[in-house]
Length: 193
Ligand SMILES: [Zn+2]
Image (tube, rainbow, N blue to C red; front, side):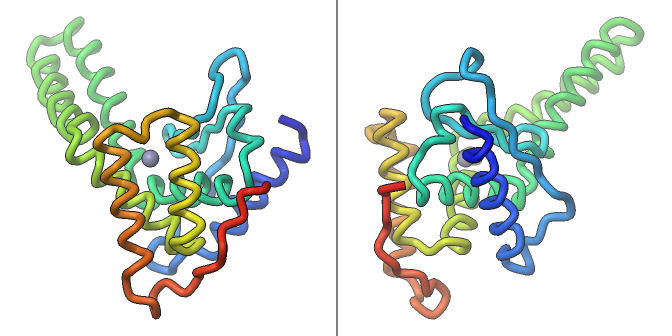
């Protein structure tokens, strides 16, 4: 990824932050980091502990896909989904420390891990988090570009056949037919970059 490329992503993130719906405003400024190519190949973007991570390949994606990724990852941050990650780390730390010094503390750690497991791994809750993140992307950029960008991403990732991706695409598609006064951006998606 060239410096220019990174600049484009950073300014897209800044622009999105300024346009966020008031009720979804973030209390901190997220950072965007590009993962080294040797560490992660192919397309991919994640939010980890409040930081948006993208692969080198993802950095070169078309403009509307970039907006979808930025909007979607900001959606995860708006939803506070990173706090589940903090909870997971806390639970692991408690378990390790507790096992060494006090079995009772280890039991508490295990209980927290169980809570984190249900919230973090359960497919139904995971899907709800993805719906939420996609909704924020739609609110920022409109449904049409987000639907086509999600289809584009699923083709790159090769997961269009999975039930989760199908559910997310259907949910996104439903925004195309929802209240037109809430969603005003119906511009034609430009996937040329
Ligand atoms: Zn997501």
